[in-house]
Length: 391
Image 1 (cartoon, one colour):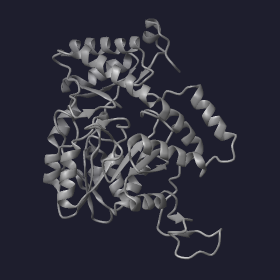
Image 2 (tube, one colour; image 1 turned 90 degrees about the horizontal axis):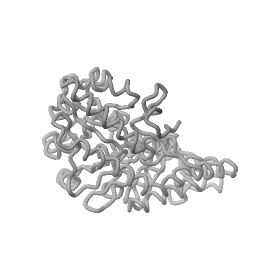
Image 3 (cartoon, helix red, strand yellow; image 1 turned 180 degrees about the vertical axis):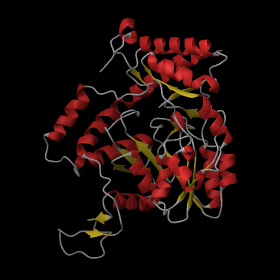
């Protein structure tokens, strides 16, 4: 439910300001209804239309739409040939899927520490963590700020590694003037409702490599193909073959219709997110006990998240008070190796000092296109008050 503009509605018991939220309008609804009334609800023309639209937007040659961002990461690892005993290097400050995708394939994630300024994976620590078993790098563009891709690509070339960008936060972000999506071997996006555009649930892998593209398409749909150039024989127009062990990671035409409509609004969504970030930057400038995000000059952030650091010993108290105020703050993220599952499978001795320090003080503030100026001012007021009260 959209919040009303009055301050009383913001401070009322029923008000709630989420950290992220989808922005759906009548045009989106009409496009979805058109598909619901059409002949194709899935495996139809909207899927390719959505893929081509995102590929054109990002500058990639090929795109494969799937059921989630996690599915995108999984089939990217499969296409990269990740298998038993192979290692991938990624960041601990991410959602678990960035590491889980290696486990799904029998591989093993290795965690490199983060840069203390950008919170992105540190290329120097990537270099230190490489072994003879390393097969791929999965840099995560945390909050929407691109990683140092020149350095990462240099490391990958030196060691013959595949680069799979986790761009779940970074649709619309730019690195040295180029949009994220067409820079590496593969790039994965998520279209979850809190992301820049949504298909309700959904994801996509982008690549410039035709062979990777063909593998990704196979893994998306059971490893089955009807394409004549891939068939080992042809028994007739009904004929298909399973060439590999794939998955049912298909996305529907209904979802892709929503995605196509949402993509048209992406420039506005990005503009609003950047405006909100600037207001936060200005509001917290000079606040001794609030650290705001640092931006590298060669990067244009798409601001999936806006994170601050507060005094670690007071983070829990500040967080709880903001929640009591009706502000849906969150923490992104618990270092992946801290999760009980990872502790049980041999990560109990892992520690990345910069990631640990960041995690202790992190709070994610609301940032989404529907956030009103009055709501943002209320968030700022509450953050300043609670930080000053507790230090």
